[in-house]
Image (cartoon, one colour):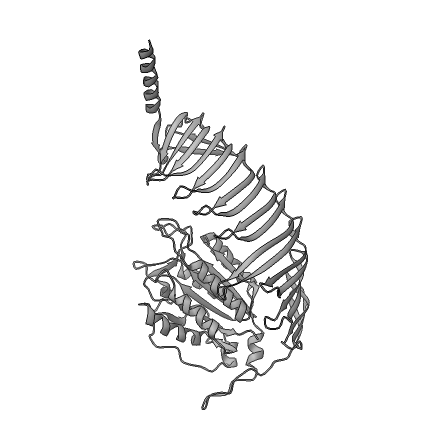
Length: 532
C-alpha cells in the first residue's frame, strides 16, 4: 500500500511538471480594460494555469494565470537563468512583496504592493548592497521622507511629501565635477509649491545665491560674487517673467548695470563698464570700445542633451552625462550663463528633444545667444547621405524615432537668437554641414561690432563622418580650454583652434567648425562672455 501511494505521488508530480505551458510572448494576446489586463492565447482563450513565457532572446517569466489574469507568484529570469524580479499577483494586481535583483544576485529594489498600489517603505540598492534610494508610499501616493544617497551611502538629497504633494524643507548636495567641489541647496515647499526661503551654499558656508518665493513662479533672486561674497546681482520674477529692477554689482559693491522691467519687457537700462581689454598686439586693429556693451546685452542660454543609457541593441555609453555636467559647470562658474537659462536633458527620448526644441522656437528671442550641446550616439546613412542623432529610446534598425541632422538644422534656422552655436560630440556628427569640409583653420578675426551685429549659425563637431571614442577627448579639451581661458571675450573660432590641435594630437579624429548650410547665417560669430 505504501508503494502504491509513493508511485501515485510521483505520478502526480510528473504530471504537474508536464502541465506547465511553454509559449513565446509573440503568441500571447494582451488586452487592457482600464486598470485590468487580460492575457489570452492566439486563439483568444484566457490563459489558465502555469506558464513559462519567453522572449526572442531567451529571457522568460514563470507566471500563474487565472481566467486571463495573473494570480499567484511570478518570477522573471534573464536568458542565463538568473532571477531578475519576483512578485505576487492577486486577481491581476500586484500584491505583497516586490523584489528586483542585480546580475550578481544582490537585491536591487524591494517594496510592497497593496491592491496594485505601492505602499510603505521602498528601498533601492547598488550592486554592492549600499542603499541609494529610500521612498515611502501610502496606497500609491508619495508620503513622508524620501532620501537619495551616493555610491558610498552618503546622503545627497532629502525630500518630504504629504498625500503626493511636496511639503516641508528639502535639501540637496550638488557636485560640480569641473572643480571637484560640493554645494548645498535648501528649499521649502507648501502645498506642492516653492515657498519662503531657498539658498545654495558652498562647503565653507558662503552663499552662492538665495531666493524668497511667493510661489513657483514669483520670487526675488540674489547672487553673490565667489571671490568676496558680496552681492553680484538681484532681480525679481513675477509669473515667470522678469519684473521691476534688475541690478548687477561690481566686486567693490558699485552698480555695474541697472535695468527696469515690466512683465518681462525691458523698459530702461543704465550701464557702467570697466575697461578690461588688454593692450592690442603690435599691428593689430584696436578693439572697439563698445564691444563690451554689445556682448553684455545678450542673454546666454544653453540646451545640453546627453544620452548614454540606450537599449542593448544600440549600446550604452559611459560618459555623455558627466561630460555635459562638466560643460554646464564651467559655463555657470566662468561664463555669463545662469542656472535658469540652461536646460539639461539626460537620457532624452525623441519626444523630450523635439518638445524642447519646439519650446525654444517660441521662447528664444533676438536678444539671446544660444548654445546647443549634444553627446550621444550618431549614425550616418550612406544610401541617404544623411546623418542622425539617436535618442535614448532609439531602435538600432528603425529610423522612425531618430532625429536627422536636417531636423536639427531646421530648428536652428527657426530660432530667433542672434548667435547659435551647435557643439556635437557624436559619431558622424560632421554630416551636419552637408558639404565638403575645409581643412584650413578659420581665419583669426578681431572681435568687432560686425561679428556681433550679424546673425551666426555655426557648428563645432568632434569629427567628420566617422565614429568617435566613447570616452570623449573632444569634450575633455573643450572644457579644459574654457576653464583656462583668461580673455574677457572668447570667439567660438578661437576655442575651436585650440581644441582641434589637441584632439588631433591624441585621437584619429579631425574636429570641424563650419557654417551650418541654409540656416540663415549672416557672417557673425558666437562669443563666450567671461564672468567678472
